[in-house]
Image (cartoon, rainbow, N blue to C red; front, side, top):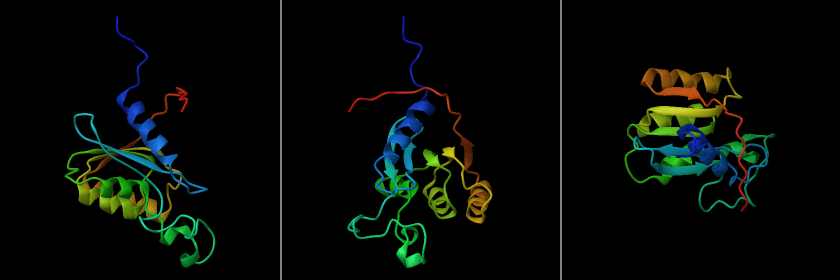
Length: 158
């Protein structure tokens, strides 16, 4: 008989997105993303961090201050990194991401052809950039839904 306690596809891909977020060096927010094709094959993975060539020891991780001295002007979000890391068409793909995409990432998601978003947290729900993101995704016909946590705990010894 086959096992019955195997991971569902959503558990598997959200787990990978969550693990990808653990690569982020951001001291406050670690966002991971996993893009999956229609045949359940992983196409790309990303996490939030600075662009190539921009040292995470020299650029700011601060959240407070003017735009130039905070991380917000410099960090590339996990979703955008996953999109940029792929060298092909993402038409019809599904994006698993640990945090609901901001309005800037929503633009890239729409333009790349991703059709479904499965997200973990929506902690910025209701703020203008979140509302703008949802408005654009709705207008473009991109489906999104919150991942339903199963409560399953996994232990991985590395």
